[in-house]
Image (cartoon, rainbow, N blue to C red; front, side, top):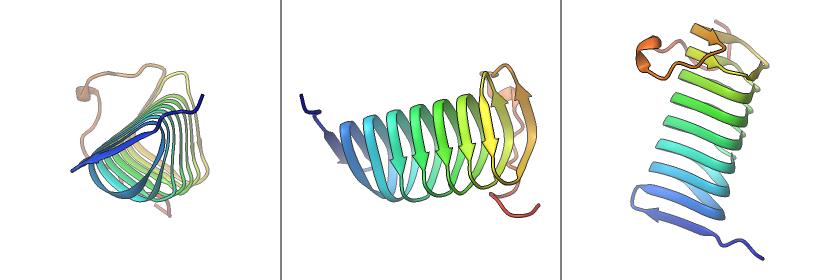
Length: 157
């Protein structure tokens, strides 16, 4: 049986249900439910992958959530990123608050304000800077994390 693909953009939001592809651009919310790819740079208030997703451009999001697997071919910037599963970022990650329950590979540098690792594997090829790091438990409220970002992605400190 062949998968049914639904790709919709209703003004600001974009959604893939099943299997599909989106062009990069500026969106309110981007949701991939199933398997999807984005060709080009994308900026979104919320970027959520439930299943498998990949991008071939840079990603900027206020909230980025991976429930499943994701592959980002360029730099990722987010205010808050959560990985529940497996994710890889080729060129670097700049994030205020990072939560990982699973595995995250960062090919470039990582600049973060707060990093929370549950039962996780975090591999960083280049430099790592974080103002606050917690291994083991993942706090659920914002009171536990600092509020000012730390530096940019990659490069020398």
